[in-house]
Each structure stands twice: as structure tokens, then as C-alpha cells.
Image (cartoon, rainbow, N blue to C red; front, side, top):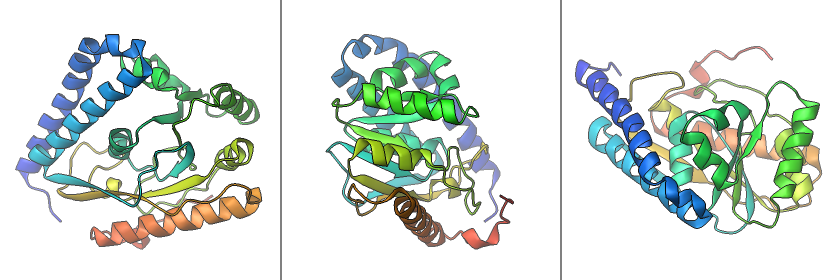
Length: 250
């Protein structure tokens, strides 16, 4: 679909408001970070407002399918863009993320992310990063909430195939809690490193939970098959053929 000039103008306006709101609301609501309960309320308020602006300006509706988990679970999610983060943060009652360590130093954003209980990870250090991640998560054990990890470790463009990393399996094995797979087609409308926003309906779908106790190899195979299959189906529903994009070599 060819995008017209109004789409680009609306996308630029949306991006400006996205960051202006982040600064203004982030500073005004900073006292909320003294309480984790109020931190979540502040974050959900910001996300709800941004998603409303996204619909009004860019004609992108957001839809959540499946049962949103309220108990303590591990969430293994497909990650296309900042949009799927906004949706998860808006609808999960106590979301906390495995995130790049660099993000903790971003003013305002980092403060809220850490107050949520998110775990910063130094990518590229492999074994040491894995140990630090597990230690931080276990240190926060018992705090409940929904721990979100992106098994591919980064944003992935629609149709691209990147391997699933073992970190999700390690957390699944160590935490001993159910895992909820999450699929999305968000990247079709809000692309990775793209500044335009394509109109349509962006979906985040919570799939059937995987009970604890599976062997790690079986878990990793199941989570990849389920998340990739459901995400591909959502992308096709949105009019995008995930098989039409060339795959990077592993």
C-alpha cells in the first residue's frame, strides 16, 4: 500500500507528541515512583494516552486477544517495535521487562523501567550477562508480576527469522512458573527503525500458557513454534506476507 503525504505528516506529529508526553508526564508523575503501585498507574496512563493518539492521528487501532495474565508468569513475546511494548505495558497489571542495560540511563524512561522491577542486561557478554540476569530476577523473586522477555533478544522486522536465545529457557527452568507466549503483528504498522505509521489494526495476542516443568529443549522448540506461527498468522491477517521477506543467514 502506497503511503500518502498526510500519513507522513501525521506520523511526525505523533512522534513529537510521544516524546513530549514522555518528558512532561514523566516529570509531573515522578513522585509516583516512590510507590510501585503508583508507578504502574502512571505508566498505564501514559501508554493509554499514547495509544489513543496513535488511533486518532495515525489511524492505528490496537487490539488485545486472549486472556491477559494477572498471576505471576513468564511472558515470551514477539518484539517488532516500541508499539508492542506500549500495548503490554498498558494491559498487563504488573509488567516488568528484561531490557538492554543502556536503557536504564535514559532520563525518565530508565527511572520508571527500574521502578517497575525491570532487569537490565548487558548484551554481548553472554555467560556473564546470563548469570547477572538470573541473579537479578531471582533477587526480585516473590514480588509477583509478569516478567516479559523477548526470546530473540531484539526487535525483529516482520518476516525476518532470528534464532531464539537460551535466556528464555533458563528463566523458565529457574523460576518454575507458567510461561505465556505472546504473538503480535505490530511491526506491520509501526516498523522497526521506521518513522512512518501505517493505518490498520495492531494486535497483541496472549496464547495458551505453557505449564512449568518441560525439558528446556522441548520448551524452546515449543515457544518458537507457537510464537512464530501465531505472529505469522496475525501478519497475514493484516495483509502482510511474512514469507515474502528475505531471511538473514544464521
